[in-house]
Length: 124
Image 1 (cartoon, rainbow, N blue to C red):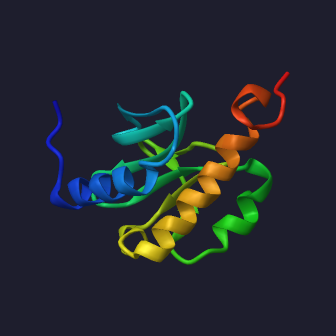
Image 2 (image 1 turned 135 degrees about the vertical axis):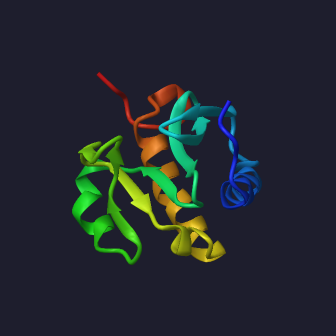
């Protein structure tokens, strides 16, 4: 099992608090971090050095990459994860207001793809 850095541990605790009101939240080790799943879909992940991986609407990708501290998410040795996957630098994830904003973006996407039984749009 991989050791959790102090930065990651702090971010995990903050994410637990911010997502505590959401239904069906669980934590899973994936993408090199601790992912937070809501309704069986990844919302965000606390990364090793305190950065945040965000799963957002691919149609907002360009807009969201324009935010300070945001960059395209990569997997392994620089392979792009694709539109809708954004890494937020540790400095920006450390700011409570910004962290809350990014969780809001991810939860908006989670609800939109969740299907009508979960309050989201129907998926085909």
